[in-house]
Structure formats: C-alpha cells, structure tokens
Length: 487
Image (cartoon, rainbow, N blue to C red; front, side):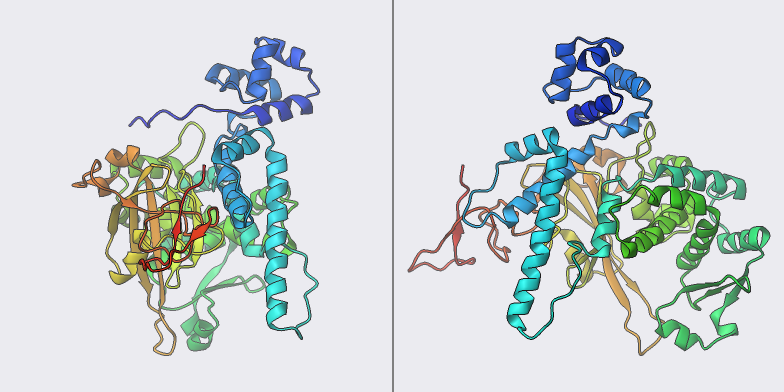
C-alpha cells in the first residue's frame, strides 16, 4: 500500500553543520556533491529543497545514514516556539508563524536556546508565585527548569519515538524466540521459559511467598531478586500486562549494552531523568519484542490498523498497541504517522507523542472538544471523530477510555483515556474511517485555549495569549469578552 508523497525537505542547517564538521569549504563540498556552489548555498539557506539524489550523495559524503537528515524536527520546533512566544507575549505582539518558521529552519540552535530560557523563566515564575503565596517557605536549591519526566518526554519527542538500535535488536530476538510469526498463544509461558533458559530466572506469583495485599498496596507489579534469580509478579495481572512485564525483564537483561549506548550521548539529562529514560527505553524494547517491527507493520496494514484485532494477534493491550503504531518510523519502512496520547480524568496528559502536525500543549489543558475527553463517558467504547485544527488540517481521531481494576475494594481503579489518530489523507488505510463522511463537517478543535485562534468557541476556558481582550458594557456573551486576530 503506497503512502502519500512526503512534503519537500528543507535541511539547510543540517547540511551546513555536517559540512563544517567535515572541514569542507562550500566549493569543495559542492564539487563532491556534483552541485554548483550557488546551488549548495541555496540549500544551506533553505531556499531550495533537498532532492533524493542530493540526499543520497550527501549521506555517502558525510558517512551518515539518510535518517540523520531529520525533517520532522523543524515542525516540532516551530510548535514549541509558538507556544513559548505566546506564553511570554503579554502586551507585545507575538512573532508571526512565518517568523517562527524562519527561526526554526535557519537558526535551530538559537531557537533551542530560546526554549531553554523560556523553561527557566517558567520555573522562576512559578517559584515566585509560590513564595508570594507562602512567604515563609524556603526556596529550593534546584536549578532544573524541567522536571525529570518533562526531560524524558522531550528525550523521546525529539527522537521521533523511534530507537533503531533497540528496535532491530528486539526484532532479532523475537525471531529467534518465535514471537509475532503466529497468533500469540500461551505467550506468557513462552517468555517465562525463555527467562529460565537464558538466565535461570524463576517466576514466582506473589501470593505464594509474601503478603499479596502488601505487595499490591505499594504499587509494585514486578520485582526482580537478582541474588536468588527470582522474578515476582503481582497476582491478578491482566494477561497483556503479565506478558509485557515478562518482556520488560527480558529486555532489561538482554539489551543492557544497547540501553547504555542510547543513554550515553544524552548529556543534557539529569541523573533522575536518566533513570526514568532507562525505564522508558526498557518499555520501548519490550513493545518492540512483543510486536516485532516488520511483521507488526505488515499485519497492521493487512488488518487496516484495527487495534482490537492487533491486540488479539500479538497478545497486547489497547494502549500498548496504539503506542507501538506511533513508533513505526524506520527509514525505508515507515508506517502511517500517528499521534498517541494518554489522558487522565483531570485532563492531564501523562503520555504523548505525535508523528503528525497535531501538537499537544506543554502548558495548560487540551481542547475540551477533542473526543479523547468524551471517551470517559463511554468506558470501553471506541469513539471516532473527524476533527479540524486551526491550520485547516483534518484528523481522524480515535479515543477510548480504559478502566483497570485494582482487584482490591480499598484501592481505587485506574482510569485513563487513550487518544490515537492520523491525518485524514491516510483514512482509507484505517478501519475506523468506515462509514465516516470524510468530506463532511469536522469538529473544530485546537491545541489549547491559550494557543487557539478560534474567536467564537463557546467552550473556551480562558482567552488566547496573543491578542487583546475587548469587553463591551451592556453586552453579555457566553464568553464575557471578544478577541480579534491582529495582522
């Protein structure tokens, strides 16, 4: 099945950086690439797109793979810049979208420094407000501008949520074990047998050795006792969760070298964030092991990305399957670019990733008109929505609320919703578009109220940051102010 053609690639800063690293003059580099110096100069200044021929020649010249020339980072950088500039605009006009595009494409390092300064500003502003409310509180000594979880979120975000070394290693191991080639029958026993065969690790249900209520109350679902070679699993785990935890333990032991290789260059991560990132990488590898890339991609296309059918085939959960679909970004074998998000009852986004132009707000809540929120009213039901962002791009949005039983009357159940979707140009390849009028009226949604350009939304919670408020005496509207878009 052929995917739609990708947009033109403007990779000027990347070309210039690689040329400078190779210590090549513009003339020498142009000669090696069989280009004129003026043509290469236009590429480096983003005045010309990069053709496939030039990209292949540059890959050979600089000794890097084509995947090093990333195009999607620019769109992410623009979205982050837009949110940051709106956040601090106050009375000054925010930069236009064209100005932000120019900054992101021509001076990406400077744009990243601006974002780092904005994060520091946010941290200091929040501390000042907290101290103003509680003047006797002592300030902390921490200078981190991001929480460890935010650091890790960006760590995966700017790697397109695709870690090739782990993905390839997991796919190779899955083939040797025999995972993914046939429907997942008795997968838990197969993984348990592999743990014993490779490391002599014995699986022990918690009810057999310790107080299961105590184990459950602490939130533990897996504990590995390296000294005695025993792996404890919480009782009453759902089958997909049990399988995933077994796969995670295998990934942690089998891919130790690959994990270190991925984390070593990440010098900007704090110590705590590094530990959290390792957990995320182990989970990534476990998903890649249970859903090996090539076979999962082929099966997904065959089943038209029907998540429930994929669940049954691979023995995974709804969330695990959606997340895996959002990671299919291997060069030369790319899947459909999906976004993936997990939202709790309060509207907090606890996981997020987007291979699409669909972006999630870093600060503040998401749009209330987005169907992921409505999913909580219909637990277990798959909700489908045709939505349109302010830039005019339409999306096929799938949402489903999930309830995970605690197995304990005194412990609340876990509830969250999974959001998943893609641009409607891929809708024919998605089973959830069946019977949907793709040319019909789409629900107008936005990133968040503070960034939304729509001036007539009755669900607006607070005004947009980038335009002045107008309050007219003698009038009362659903939203008690108006805002106009300035040129």
